[in-house]
Amino acid sequence: MKYPFPVGKSDFIQGDEAIARAAILAGCSFYAGYPITPASEIFEAMALYMPLVDGVSIQMEDELASIAAIIGASWAGAKAMTATSGPGFSLMMENLGYAIMTETPIVVVDVQRSGPSTGQPTLAAQGDVMQAIWGTHGDHSLIVLTPATVQEAFDMTIRAFNLAEKYRTPVILLTDAEVGHMRERVNIPNPEDIELVYRKLPANEEEAKYPFGDIHGDLIPPMPIFGKGYRTYVTGLTHDERGRPRTVDAEIHRKLVERIVNKIERNKEDIIDFEIFELDDADVAIVSYGIVARSAIRAVKMLRNEGVKAGLLKLNVVWPFDFEMIEKVAERVHAIYVPEMNLGQLYHLVKEGANGKARVELIPKIGGEVHTPQEIVKAVKRCEKCI
Amino acid sequence: MQIRLAGVGGQGVVLAGVILGEAGAIEGLNVVQTQDYSSASRGGHSTADVIISKEPIYDLIVTKADVLVALAQLGYSTTKGSLKKEGLLIVDTDLVKPDREFIGAPFTRLAEEKTGTALTVNMVALGYLVAKTGIVKKESVEKAIGRRVPKGTEEINLKAFRVGYEEGLR
Figure 1 (cartoon, rainbow over the protein chains, first blue to last red):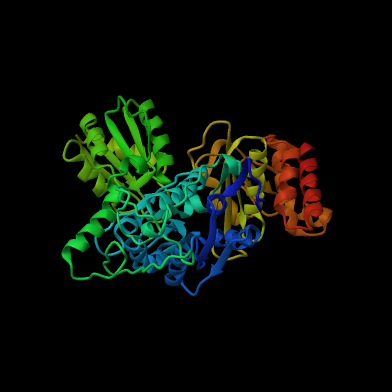
Figure 2: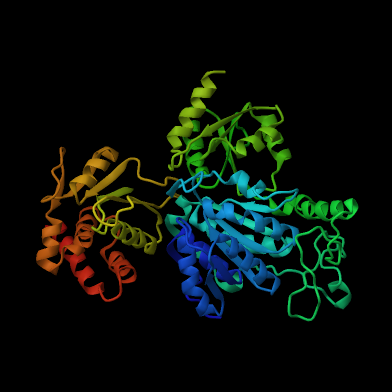
């Protein structure tokens, strides 16, 4: 296959552009979207590239329709993606729940801008963390990835597709205006060197009868494809293993929803990804994710130069969340700092994970600018002094 | 090395930053390029930041600029605080009246006189910057210009870049 952009070499591109190119290299053949700053460049790139790779890029009337379209495309066998920002992401919440309930592999990119409402359209924030995890109603789980660099935006987009296909689930790529609009050098691998995952299909007619049944004991049912010869019923109502609505049977509901949650929870080890910097002998830990993690790395170095033994835990996946790992970190340090571009979201998960073993302090910042390393250093030192 | 380019909307400050960044990337250096501009397409402030290094870059925006290029008074006054004390200030000497030591040339006038349009002021200034600092090679910038400017304008932009480069060598 010929790609409409250079492969097997590095390029100097924006985060949004990197996401679009990675999606195509991951096998995405259907994109539906509605333009919104700061995610529009993803749509622009998809509109340009998709026709050249025999894919489809379509502008829908709004974000509700955009996510609905990619859910349909996924059931027709396509790897599918949409991208938006806060206001559009809010509109997608209903059908995000539908994708979870119907176990539809899709990738939703949220290039976070500052909210609430239309807020600061051109400026970055991390205000959608809890929304990405818990924005849709009902008991559920899904996967949320958080890139900090343009290279990570590229790599994690490919991973988002692989995880979506592997676990038959929506995956959120939760990035922000800063990563989306920043240009950096990105290594774009040769397509043959990229490992791709494809959803499990029913092996035969018998398997196809149970599109929502744990017939392989791995909690992930094979997914029949519309138009491939099987009759399948897909509904957001509580359904049995065959997909038929069963809306008043507590046992059927419990089995279905627990399986949907457990297929993520029990595979945490495979899904969760993190990096540590100088954490082994640290007295204070910084837990950070996304764009702020870059400033946090610098802050750790600056703190060490000033005699504070700091270390960093950089989370590349914020859901599922490894509460146990946070507790282990908390046992070894006396304080954990959580710099976030919001008024405290992941902070609450970290605090729960720390389980009282260490003090957990929030370093909040809103208004559109990323924390500078100096600001993190100052906040840590101020607190360390007050003990 | 932190470089900040500042001007007003319409001067092509962001494109100059992208081209400088791309030239660094062509040479295999790590580059982070970000921008800040008002929503007006003409007249508002416009800033492009380029950080180039052999080491991994954690910074996102220029906080202590080694070089500040100011193409308009508004751009200068909003960004002058970010230039290091010993940093290099490059200005359009017709349009910016700095209150500290500087070098420069009348970039806009040169663009008009030598290329027939003030639109190429960004490339003239970029040429001057590259000649004065040597941060990237002339050839890398020329390659980046070929990739990044609108189709059909490669020649005039290259010409403008060379005008600025020659001016910087004088």
